Image 1 (cartoon, rainbow, N blue to C red):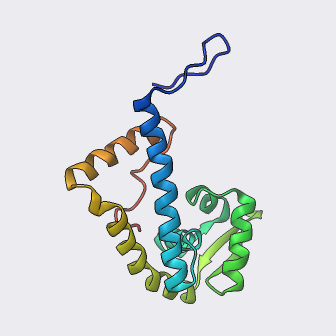
Image 2: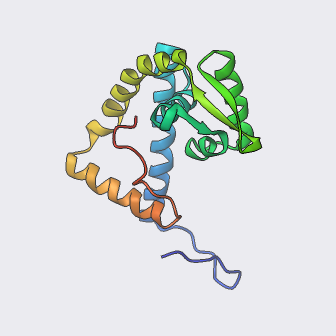
Length: 168
């Protein structure tokens, strides 16, 4: 149930259980992201955010997406995605195309080199996710955790159902 903060309510700290849950999420995300990023960078010269852009493009129809939609998927600001796309385009991993129906809009398209780089990095990434995260949870715990994330995200209008199960 979503609540709105009010100046009339007393400021209450998180209790120890709430704090452990919240900080655990933040610390786990930070540690996993840092480790997965380092593995991809060392093995393939590809940062995690670049991998995610290539992955979303590979999964999109025609291997292309509007830049604004891509920014939402990879949780980057529009300007942050633009800077990342500049680097990926310079490296030949994506190409940008203008949008015929919107002169201000643009598409990012995965190039054959980008597909090759993604395919090479995918095994490293999936192995890292399994080894660093999934191996520490039983199948039942993974199901339960997934249901928790679905509930939290649904409360914020974000659907997990649109994500392909093969993503990663």
